[in-house]
Image (cartoon, rainbow, N blue to C red; front, side):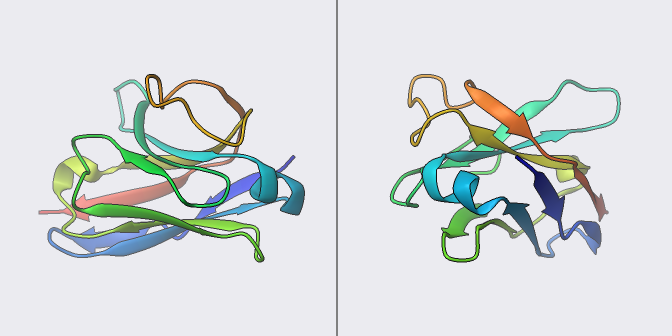
Amino acid sequence: VQLQALGGGLVQAGGSLKLSCAASRRTSSNNAVGWFRQAQGKEREFVAAISWNGDSTYYADSVKGRFTCSRDRAKGTVYLQMNSLKPEDTAVYYCAAHRSSYYSVSDPSGGYRYWGQGTLVTVSS
């Protein structure tokens, strides 16, 4: 299983970026996908999750209302639209495929089996 997060870059505060997670077709069709980020010197943190068919999403409080997760199963791609970006959003962003079709509502950050390479997002003030 291969995953690759793409679309990072440098953006000013208040701007937008759209990340994509390209995955193998089988993974994209059957598994929930999560987004995580890790800022320099900090632990990795959960950002968002989406169910296998896109009918359920979950967001960390820090991004709720600003980030939107979606997926195109036909293309095998999951997206993270990031709006109203803040300097504290600066991090390497990763996507990961869950072991199940749905993430756990009680633990949306757990159960991810496959991890992709990250993409750096830098938000300047």
